[in-house]
Each structure stands twice: as C-alpha cells, then as structure tokens.
Image (cartoon, rainbow, N blue to C red):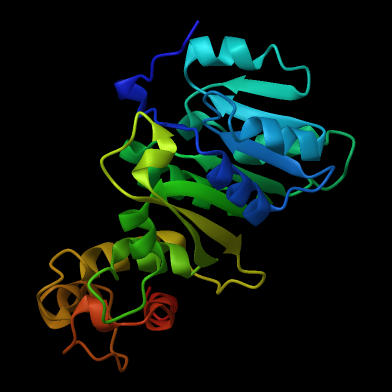
Length: 258
C-alpha cells in the first residue's frame, strides 16, 4: 500500500536516485559505523546506507512507517519523537560491552518545521557524536554556516559555530521529493570541534539571545544592560550590531562574564 505523506509530520520523501547517491557519497558510511538515521521515511536513504554499514539504527515517529521498517532485519527501529530521544544513552546502548561508547554518526532528512529544535537537542549530546549530515531547508543551512556582517548571520550561526565545523555540501531541488516542498533544500555536514572552547552554556545562550533580540540596534541598547547587571567592565565594543561580532568574540565575552 502506498504511504501518503503526512503534513503534520512534515513528510517529504526523497525520490531522486542521483541525489540519493550523492548524499551517500558525502556521508561515506563505513562497515561498523555506529550510525543513526533520523526520519527514514520510505527508506530511500536507509537502504543504501545499511547495505554499506551492515546495521543501522533508525528513529521514526510515524507508526505505520515504523512497522514497515521493522520488516528489515538489519534495522534497529526506535519509534519515537526525535526530540525525546536520549542520544547519549543510545550511544551507550549500541555498545553495552564497551567501557567507552562508540561515537554516533547521525544522518537524516529532518522535518523542516522542527529542524532548529532538533539541532539544539543534539547539541546537548554532542560529546557522543562523531559527525552529522542533515537534509534541511537551504535557507536554514545558509544561516548555520554564515559569517559575520552578512544578512544570514544570526543567533543560529553563533549558537552552532562555537561547537561545530559546518559545510553546505550539496544542493537539493524541490523536484527531488514527493511531494515537492515549496523551498530549496541542501545537505549540511556538522563535525564537532575536537577542542571546543570551555564556556558556561547557559551564559552563552542568554548572551547570544540578548544580543540578537533586536538585531538592527547597536549592542549598547540590547546587550549593554545585560553586561552591566553582571558587573562586566571589560573591553568589548558595544557600538556594533550583533551581526558584526564574530563567534570567537561572543565566546570570549561569555567566558569573561559571570
């Protein structure tokens, strides 16, 4: 029976064989990799991945699709909302006899309506992740990889770039899907930094959120009071807009703030 894409799950199924091959090549799966696929759908990407891996864990919310996926002997199916999945526990569970969890390689065609919450959820588990390859709305990836003083540079850029090296590796047009989305898509590669800067994440999160709360205003009018309340008296140029400040300066400011 043909599966009808469900709007509430943000389902758009990848059907273009050439694009699928290009994605698999970009991911470069190796036998024995501890790989997790988010939102496998109709298994367009799942099948070529598991052929190369030997075994694959998939996370699928749609009950009907989960039933289909369980018919594949080489798939371990986690039927759940990805935002409720404990990836740290998942990494440990995939190698219960090992003293140290094997790092996960996470891939998937993320539902575009909740892609940002998923990225932040995975940030909580970044210590057990080797790399991530995701299909996302191209506009979101443009923001993720943007540099300062560009219109795309914003909170998402700063919140992710302190922890990941990221690249836009492949453009995917709407006609590659059934049904076609109304937006262009792309594949992003996210590799956790081997030696990330040590920061208090809540301080960093609050700082960045405050800085970009009114991005057209200079930081003295947005971040100035926030810094004053914390007794900051360092040398940070507040006569700029948030979009002009590079990631390393936001990191340094968070490290210097109580």
